[in-house]
Amino acid sequence: MSPCSLNHAALLVVTFVSVAKGLIKYNSVLLSKPEHYYFEEELTAKGIIPEVVPRAPFRIVYLEYLNKNHSVLPGAKFMVGRPDGPVAKEPYNVTWGANATDMYTLCLFDFDAPVRAAPVLRSYIHWLVGNIPGAGVKNGETFFEYFPLRARADTGTHRYVMLIWRQPKILEFKEPYRNGTDEDDRVDFSINEFEKKYQLEPPIALTYFECEYDHTIKNPHLRYDDEEVKRKNEELRKNAKPYDDLTEWVG
Image 1: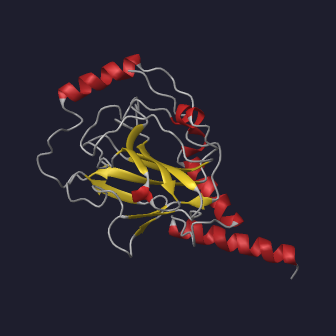
Image 2: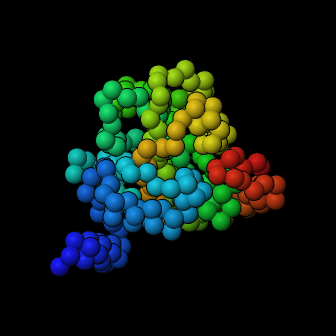
């Protein structure tokens, strides 16, 4: 069999495994060309390309939330709403194949706030850290502490995206600091403007996962179908302007 035929056969195998499992099992943070092809297909199907990034980077971010045997793969789904839920606290480990001599910036945001049908509050920042030396996220400069991931009742599935940028140097960031309970300014953010402001190149690594409200929780403190919530969202929907590549929605 010719090398060309072998490559074609290998591609068919990858296709079959991907379709059969429904979720690609990537072998490492650095993608092979076939893996990158299917990662790009996956991001396009989820609307992350081109709305967040124009194309997929060749690196995947792995998050470890629960224990050392639990790495969050792209496309993973979590039920949220409990204070002890799997993504209520920041991951204890974030891996993207960092170079020990480089500096990085990390951002995690909700792409579907407050509701996927009318995401007028995208992008809602849950975590923002800059000047990360190598893979040492805890040694970086935190601007927005990790805010528990959540999706209110009856708002459907929310897509969460994490981006990693390689910095050209140590940067002097001028971003507000918000602790892990402060919600102010988290919706007033533009990925494009942030990149331009600090002259960042396109993200070198990315992952996404999904969260949906856990409807087994009894008596949720706020349901999306409450009249007050519906009224506020209708106001946002009427006043919202079209966005371009994650520029701020204006309510």
